[in-house]
Amino acid sequence: MDDDALARAALARYAVGERLELVRRGENSTYRAGDVALRVHRPGYRTRDMIRSELAWMEALRDAGIATPRVVPARDGDVVVDLPGGRHASALTWEKGAPLAESPAMGDWRDLGRLMAEVHLHGASWTPPAWFVRPAWDREGMVGAAPHWGDPVALGTWDGGTRDLLVAVRERVRDRLTDFGTDAGRYGLVHADLAFGNVLRRDGAAPVVIDFDDCGWSWYLWELAVVLAPFDGTAGYAPRRDALVEGYRARRALPAEDLLELPTFVMARRLVTLGWVFTRADTAHAASQREQRIASFPAAALRYLA
Image (cartoon, rainbow, N blue to C red):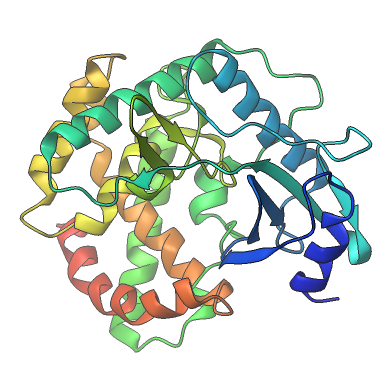
């Protein structure tokens, strides 16, 4: 069954009406059914317990005052619906609001930094349920032998010079992450894609954080690197970094010593997304970014190695 057929099968399990509209095909296929966002999860990407765990943290954040969508259970009360072929679906409230997008206003970057810190503080103080399981964006998950989003060295067709750069940069990043360590002050539960498109501005209410599909264990600097990486090598990088860090430090400590390692996490993000443009070649989002990500890598690699 294709995703559209699976979505129709899933819809029958929810008390949300019969009209279904495809919104986006990305990591998951997302549909709108009235005031509900129905997700048909990508095959083989997240287990049932991983999806359940994602939803549990979202609900805990919401209970703590950080706005997230509400989980919508199926008619039988389950928050994850099993579908043919080992697939899964889940449903959330459809949240109205305009994505902040990649705002040029430094005030928005400071606000985003504060929001990141609040999410991290919650993750550090929250006690997850015993069955909680999420992926780790750690050294192995990012740049190990089998990264979550694929090994760009193995997946791409590279000229000799670019391949050598990839290998050299990956080794440098691996070494730096090992040296940086995973102390509790540096590493914990993160959203992992807390970029402007996943923060919805609402009139008269706090912004709502969406799309926890990649949440898991990682360095707190990874959260900052994800949103800053698109500006790496541009004149806009430094002011955005400074505003983001200023906002973050208004809520949570970020030592200057730790911040020195931010370029390693930005480069790790480049390597991770280089793998992603190959393993997600079936999505329009990845296909539209592949050429630019490949073309911009050599100059970024040389800057980092220097």
